[in-house]
Image 1 (cartoon, rainbow, N blue to C red):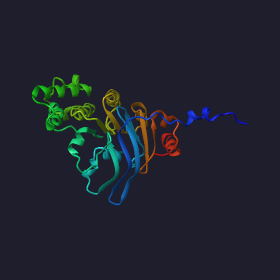
Image 2 (tube, one colour):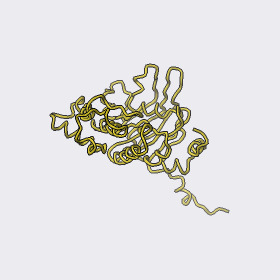
Image 3 (spheres, rainbow, N blue to C red):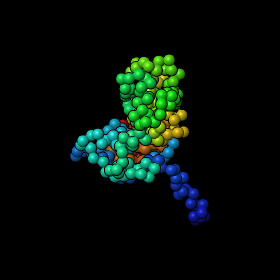
Image 4 (cartoon, rainbow, N blue to C red):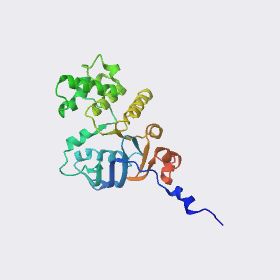
Length: 270
């Protein structure tokens, strides 16, 4: 006979404390012409934390990332349905200014892509475009602060007028991060930001991500499970266009609920 009372059993069924969602997706589907690339994805992405998307190549993680700043709009054959909100507001509302959305949602790509301009102009471009500085002094301050926050200023402070394309790969990626944060975004999307970098440059980017999460909501697509485990607080596992499982990074890596997650993490496929 069991003497366990409902009162004793109850804590086991209590869900994780609710975390305020900065970005919320509900039943998001993406089609590229006839190809159904993303299927009914629903997930909450918390504010001021790092959420990593993991999964094998072609599973839909980068496709979903690009939905969050409407980059898929630039692909003529792409169709997105469902709902994505930021702070409760629908980002696919036809009245929404996509340029302003992309100022709120910065993006760092897989391959560093600095503009063929000076280091200074790379960072100043966005603030100038959005009228964020009233004069040169204010613009200088934004540039310097952005480079400092990207842990790059000390390395480039004496050559701000030199071309950004002359920097090393890791420095170029940090310059792209400085460029992204110069317009004070609320969300930063990173699509495999370290895949083209060596281990030392990767470690610097990971340290930077950890520092930035106190001020930004960060979503990172990574092919490296070790990186996801190191930098993120939440992890979502994608497979064949579906979101299989999402939870705290510790739970996903130590006690996944779905066998597919377990198989991927232990290297049985991928």
